[in-house]
Amino acid sequence: MKSVAEIARAVRSGECSAMQVLEECLAGIKAQAAPLIAVTRLLEDRAREEAGRIDAMIGNGVDPGPLAGVPYGVKDLFDVAGLPTTAGSVIYAEAPPAAADAEAVARLRDAGAVLVATLNMDEFAYGFATINAAHGTTRNPHDPSRLAGGSSGGSAALVAAGLLPLSLGSDTNGSIRVPASLTGIYGLKPTHADLPLAGVFPFAESFDDAGPFTASVADMRLVWEVLSGRSAVLSGAAPRVARLGGRFRENADPDQLAAIDATAPDAPLIELPDIARARSAAFLITAFEGGNLHREALAREAMAFDPATRDRLIAGALLPRALYEEAQAFRAEYRARIEALVADFDVLLAPATPCVAPLVEDPRITIDGKLVPARADLGIHTQPISFTGLPSLAVPLYRPGVLPLGLQLIGRPHGEADLFRFAAQLEEQGIIGSGPPPVAV
Image (tube, rainbow, N blue to C red; front, top):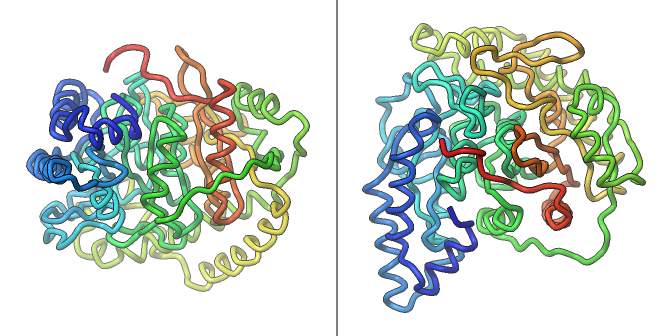
């Protein structure tokens, strides 16, 4: 499929219609998406109405916006008017329909994009694997025997497969960056709360963020500008780069470390303090907020929850508030320390995941020499960054024919433009880049 920018340019110029783009997109999804287990609802009627509206605007000489005719999907926790917002759970399958679109969906619609599907996720976004008891396990388009990652796995899989040029996910502790890394595409966790969260089913509001998946940094920049309402002003100055050491180098693939060191061989190696404590506090805050959000539903119908989600939510609901408040106090102090530490840099380089995608049949990874569950530990490098609230862009190493693997480009607060600028340089150098799966799904 063409890029976001190419589609919008072709539709706005009249080279093709939004309806033509949509019908090709729907045909591709119907023909190829089923083995990925990524789509939960195909929204054909809505999509055709939106595409028809775009074509009518163009016919009347009205510019429909910078994303004219671009088809996209959303993780199944964004409100879509007229549909229940399930957050990947059967518990809300028959919930009252959303009265309006989520704010992020509305902004994409107003920019001319066309919503075509809701996409699979870990139930209530609690996991890094997209193993869903109701819908199934989303597969990696580069190797369907492997996980796509999560919890926004459905959103990543369709972009990685070339079936959508754009999708939306959410990232609490790495749920955009992990699947982006494992499927070989770009995924952005913005500066905390910078992109609209209204109408997004929460998981842990202290960390929740909405963000896009794309197949190029140029598309990512364009979509971010639409969602944020700001322009990514790219200065000509060379970015100030540092490499993250310590725990970020202890559990990483040699190809990631080689790429980081080749990209910025003279960049200082800095170590974030108290990483283990920060990750533990992030786990605790996530568990407490998630558990208390679902406390009433757990008391009412616990057995309806996905078993892998239910036990973790119950454990979180039982945590004492004093412990949660202690973790939040540590977080406030920690964020101030980290922001001071990285104030002299525009970009921090780190791995996004510790390894390539694990097998569906054996969803475990090696951390510190021991096999551990992928569903909990694929976020070992992303979770500490979420704890700080800093923006982080997952970018794919360019390695065609090999399982995907990504890096994180981490910025200062509201420093997304610097991340886009540096990523564009790495693309031009051939260090990063998204490639299609080796064979059709």
